[in-house]
Length: 161
Image (cartoon, rainbow, N blue to C red):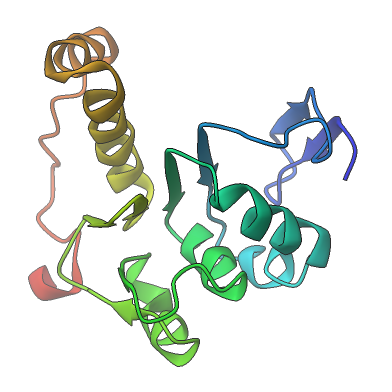
């Protein structure tokens, strides 16, 4: 794939890639984001899957948030690995050979890390900052973004509904 702009599946967000896959042969961290509406199609992108398999060999961390784990399992990177995703896709993970853990927000298995959903993505980001730069830096980042979750409802998991 080449660099350039991509419009998110929502149609209101544009992301710009500054480097192609070929120009990114050894990233330290790979983070695959999720999209309930697009992850299935993205998981069929053979260029992306081949790149993920190739770079995973040298990453420090290979991570995904929400349904990004569906892309990772399609690349063969979650085979029989404990992992998590958005609650709506747990059966997909299991069906594709991962071991979905529905009661966890962050699941680590070696250098592979998965986050359950959108808000768990913030948790995962802070966790990665802590692992890479240390706990004090992660605490400072949490303070800087004002992340102090106190949801107005207690229905953020199927266990609470």
